[in-house]
Image 1 (cartoon, rainbow, N blue to C red):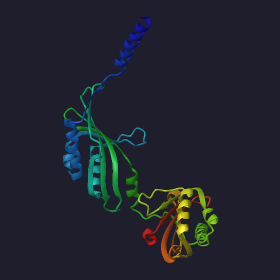
Image 2: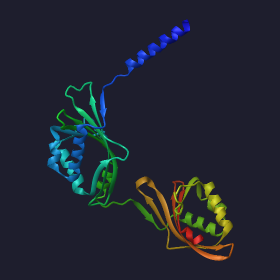
Image 3: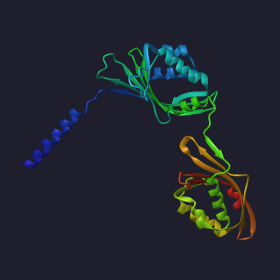
Image 4: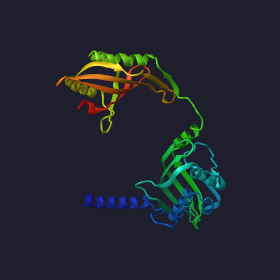
Length: 313
């Protein structure tokens, strides 16, 4: 009996704890007049109706960049914000701002610390367009928090978004270089030696050109999923069982590109691989384009092969 009594008391104390630990601080709505105000405001923005947009904002309106790292960021006032919104309309073709697929806006009426009865609306948006001058495509997610007064005027907007696409537009207004192209380089030499090792059936030398963690991509595969060196060796064996490499001819000349952005090192090369099908001795010429990514140590860390697989049928 003592054990049962103790259990009942413990359960009652737990219920009391849960009741005091969980407190409501307002209501979340998926249908609310404030949501309709925001939707109309966004429509006016896409239409480039600056006057209509301004009618939805309070005179002391302030907009903030939620990803800003500036201390004491004072945001943009009403005039600056409206001018900023017109940039999207004026500088983008095919401009649209729609609800992000699978999401919907919420309106939140907080009880605590909300003496003026303000409403928060949060949205998840998808902004699309093509910049008229640079051709940069925008297909970016954005999250906004709106504060609305009791009379449904927008007092604040906090925007969270990816600034990378804006940086790309800004950078595209001027010409700039992005590294160096070489027609003679040690990495080009390594690719040539590797390809001609294949021609001479020296597979140990060919595979020795790769880093142990190299990844291979076949452009003809449906999902273009990368595979490991072990998996590539198995595929190579299947091909070598069916075909003999008669010769390999270089087409044009390889390029080595050392990119400034990302410090990438890529050799691109073009070849005609001349095969003999063992089953019927048919000669097959297989044009091949390779991209080989190198690490700083001069090992190949990625290989992408472009060719027409139907030629092997």
